[in-house]
Length: 358
Image (cartoon, rainbow, N blue to C red; front, top):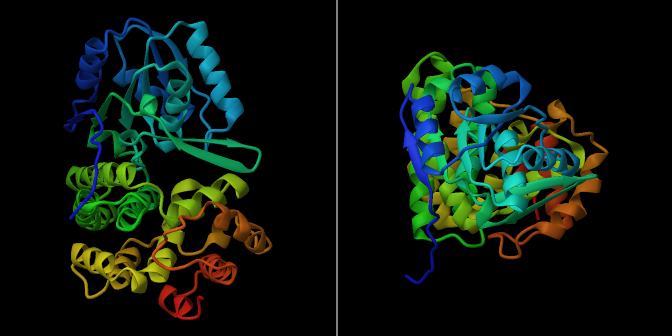
């Protein structure tokens, strides 16, 4: 066993119903005297409740999926204009991503309050979209100094979105099993993340107002993100970044649809990872475990249902090959990527579709 690992410095608060107190404690710890709150208009009321009595100088509500560069520039200008010294972001991955874009150029500390299971709050990965190209990178400045996980803040997230967001977190776990920088610690975190998400997702679908299922989801999402931040982006994430940035597909649903096809594509070439994923699901095989879970929660099944045109498939292939990891467990060819995308576009059976991929 031989590997190097860097553990990221971050405080994590995990307690239902305690978001406001935890956020106040973290802002005080950071010496915040001029707080910029970032939250989409749909979550503005929630953000104001969480940040009440803080020295807020601006509430910034312009949040957009995949963080367009122009949107990031306006948020940075607002931070400078109001002389903000701490960022508090309340929302999902797009909101956290916007806070990261501000921190990337200003160095301002972030207190992240997630309301979905995106996991961005636990990574040092940033992403920006310009034109039809999404660029990602890693920078210590964008890692939130603190995360406040409060399951009660996710109760308003509809079941369908909870499912898609949870499967996005599950994709972090699966990709972390064979991503470029993976190590035994990442794989252990990812395995426990799969176990937690596989328990939490059906619980949320069956009882949307229950706290226990949503706590399991937040716990699993956190573990998945810590593993992913260390292991790096594998094939699944590279595909989804291209599809999201190039064709403006919804982030969570895209991950939810693509995941079983990448798993089916890579599993036979990564038997150790496949066994660990299967064990985490408590299933005979990794794909069987994933598909059983997806059926139980009525997961999204086809990219054509979420905005990808059939004509986009051929266009996407070279863009994916340009960014795909060179050490993916299974060698990538234009035909293989094209067949994978077409199967995901159609919603074909992943096991059957995989058998013809080369």
